Length: 145
Image 1 (cartoon, rainbow, N blue to C red):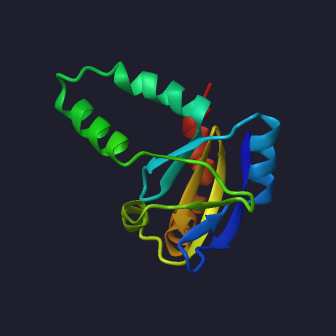
Image 2 (cartoon, rainbow, N blue to C red; image 1 turned 90 degrees about the vertical axis):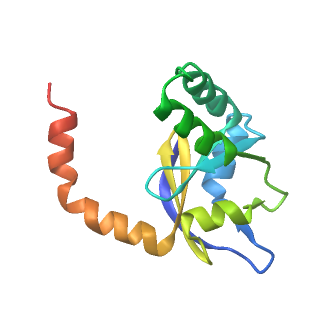
């Protein structure tokens, strides 16, 4: 559903504009509400409401008697915020999420099929630089049939 890589900046009021391509996809799929939370690899995960509910039901099914499950759910859900974008396609990221992802001004917004990831630009460039060399090796391991 969401694909591509886009560079943007946080404006003076702390708002981030979603790429027009993502706004159009959301409109086409009748997505009006998103949820953003702490993601993995120090980025933010952004889900449509439908996808969020699907993820939420999976995580709620994890046994709360397991320490790892409790830790993950606490960090994941305590960071969650429900958002809608304004008429110009902007969203306001809470400071605690910007702090988590080390976002100051420049960001890269990445479409990863069922979710959008929001990265501090320097962190994305570091991740991409470290990962692209092993991309084919990872593909072979993951897709070995």
